[in-house]
Image (cartoon, rainbow, N blue to C red):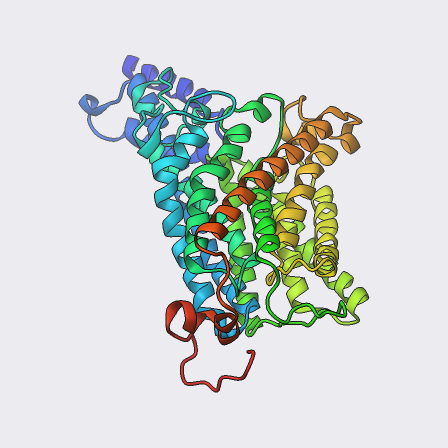
Length: 485
C-alpha cells in the first residue's frame, strides 16, 4: 500500500509538470510515461529524475523531427522555382534555367557550410559573426547542459541539434540565391551566375542575416522579420534588381519607339505547377521557423494560406482591370507575392490583417510588373516585383499590423493595432539599411564579374538560345525550332 501511494504521488507531480506542454504533446508524453512507470517489475521502475530526462529527450526528438520535415519542404521549393522560372522563359533557354535552379542549391549548401553559417550565426560582433566556420563550432546541445552556449549563441533559443539548425538555415540561403536566377534569365553566362551565387550565400546574405537573426544591430533595435521577408526575399530581390539593370534587357524586348514586345514563356503548365509547389513549401518556410512543435505552427500556416489566397485573387482582379484579361502569369505572381509579404509577420498578425496584407501584395505585384517594364528593366519572371517589392511591403506591414496579444510580447506593437509608431520606424530603418547594403555589395560584385568574365552571352548565342550555346543540348530535342523562340 505504501509503494502504491508513493507511485500515485510521483505520477501526480509528473502530470503537473506535463501541463506546461500543448494539449496533444501532453497526451503523448503522459501515455509514454504511464507505460514506462506502470509496466514491468519493481526493479524496472524509473525515478522522477529519469522520467524528466526522458521527457526532455522526447521533446527534443519531436522538435527535431518537425524542423527536418520543414527543412525538406523548403528545399523542395527549389523544384517549384525550377518549374516556375523554366515555364516563364522561352523554350530555347529551358535547359539553362533548369541547370541554374539545380546547381544553385548545391553551391548554396557548400558555401553556407564553409563560410555563410559562421558569418550569420557565429559569435562575433553586432556587424558580423566571426566563429563557427565549416560547422566546426560547439552548440548548446541538450546533452551538454542548459547553461552551455557554444559559439552559436544567437541560436540558443531553440534546443534542436546543431545539424537540424543548419539544415533549416541552408534551405533559406538557397532560396535567396534562387531568386536572382529568374531576373537575369535568358542572357547571363552560366559561370557568372555560379560565382554570384557563391558571393551571395557566403557573404551578402549572411551579413544581413547576422544583423537581424544573429544577434546583430538591427535585432538589438527590435527589428522584426519572423521568417525572412527582408532577410531572404528582399536580399534576393535587391541582388536580382541590380543584376537585371547591369545586364540590360533581352534582345528585342524594348523598341526604339518606346514600345514593349512581349516575350512570353513557353510552358505555363510548368509555371503553374511551380507555383503550387512553392505554395506548399511555404508552410515549411513559415511554420518551420518556430523551430519547435507548438500551437503556433497551425496559426502561422493559416495566416500564410490566407495571404497567398488573397494575393492571387487581388492579382487576378488587378490584371483584369489593367490588361482587360486575367493574366495567368500575374495570378501566379500574385499568389507568390502574398506568400512573400506574410513571411515577416505570419506569427504576429490577425487572420483579417493577413488577408489585407495579401490583397495589397497581389495588387503591388501587378503594378510593379508594369512599372519595371515602363522603365525598361527586363525581369523575365517578375522576381523583383514579387520578392523585392513585397519583401519590403511585408516588412513594413509588421510595423502596421503586429498585435502584441497574438505575439505574446507587449514590445511588438503595430501602428494600426495599438497606435504605436516606434516599431514601424524600426522596420523602415531595416528596409533602408538592407537595401543600401545590398545595392552596394551586389552592384560591386556584378561589375567585377562584368570586367573579368563579361556578364552577358553574345548576341548570336542569345538569339539561338542558351541551351545550345551554354550547355550544348536542348530540353525538347526533336521538336521544330522556330526563329526567336
